[in-house]
Length: 265
Image 1 (spheres, one colour):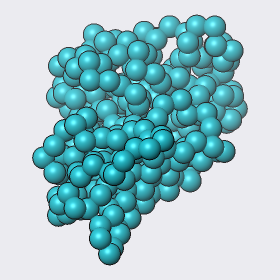
Image 2 (cartoon, rainbow, N blue to C red):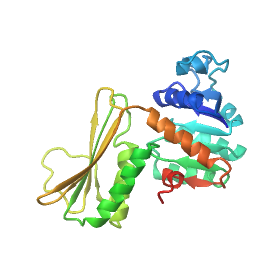
Image 3 (cartoon, rainbow, N blue to C red):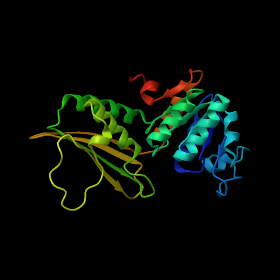
Image 4 (cartoon, rainbow, N blue to C red):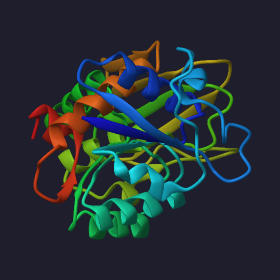
């Protein structure tokens, strides 16, 4: 199976390339960065730290879609452009891009009418188990138990709450039969008054080189349940993305999630 990596010089791009290069039966044939990026023209193997491969980083996204699957951890705008190219070529697209809004999600789903797209806020198997546990726990506990989602990431992360935090919030809200936007509390400052019943709160920490920590707190009267996942290495996301791409190969067009890939639906 052949692979291409969008955003190949970023932290996740490098991890994705390394995972493809180490996997049996997988070949890395392309990688891209935005025009003007200093990685354009450099060898993908050197970017991944494994020595020259004879394949240069390009700045033309269409080049990626000669591959069987494109792995994309970029930006919402870039991901939508990649989704349209995947649809035109009938290729697999696996994206872990965060910060995609409701309108962009609709556009992603439209592209998936013509190709298989796997989209997940987090590709880690462990995080997807955490999502399932969060949903089950929230379903068993009523609004008298407060839900708070606490996350910490490295100082370079540009969005907050993280995409994974929002996915955890959506899982908890769905289990309670409400829309997350109706119950989410994302900021607190000054005299804010008592916590609203049924609110799902988000606390975001940025600093250092933390890959990603997520804790879902269920705070009741007299007891507290905490479900936590610590990511120590980005390779767990790359491993999940590769697993998703292999699963999606030869699948019917559609917008899939890691729940589908892992059989957790």
